[in-house]
Image (cartoon, rainbow, N blue to C red):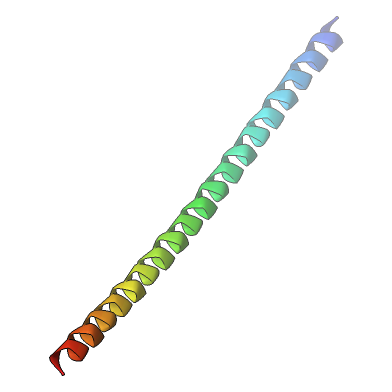
Amino acid sequence: MDYGKSFTNESSNSDSSERKKLSMSRQIALEKEKEDINKMADAFINNFRKQLKIERENSFRRFQDMMNRGAQ
């Protein structure tokens, strides 16, 4: 009987440690996924800002061209 109890305890201990390892690996995977999402979001925002800057510059050039045509 003692053998069964010690085997059960060892089995539950190994299950417990495997669960902890699995839980930790899931947390690490989630952290990496969050980092990837943050990197993608940062890239999107930076690209969007660059596009806005280009559009503002183009708009200003068109305005200057329009003003120059009117002044002549």
